Image (cartoon, rainbow, N blue to C red; front, side):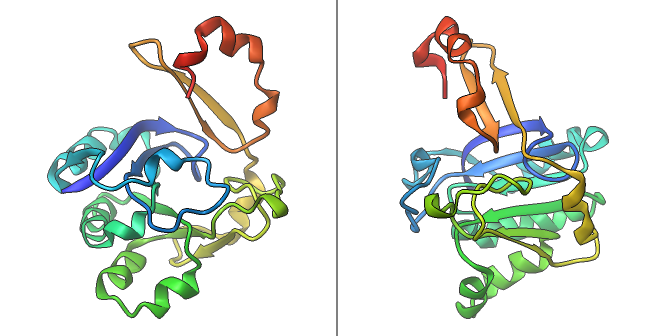
Length: 202
């Protein structure tokens, strides 16, 4: 079972093209300036089987380019995510993964599950957000220490020149507002958020 914080079935701001995004629950790294501290605790997310998640992704296949894993820390659930990724790749979809670890830290673990997961990833974006290195000039990242690792030939590294950081605002059926993506969040009209209700903004 995969411990999940939230799922967004279609977004354009978490990697190349339209993407199905899975935020996993649980992270040991606890980066000081993490923007998603609510994803740190283990065992409190919604549990999904690999089969159920794959079915959800397959239903979106015609409208997405790939799947993005975020967190939380995806590599804390490397075994199950590697298995899910293999199924996803069988559909011809790409895998993008964000991690707070560096690729060197991951490889130095000499862990079969970690290595298997890495072998399924097309684009790995590594490193935690660092406030002192704040930089929004590149897509999908917020600080200059974060790096792009193109681990397969699915994407040409030049692709990053085609994208800019963007923010999406989603309003769910319960009226709850959720913001995702990367950008200058102060640019979002505060009055818009206040009108919707402060408690509903996440």
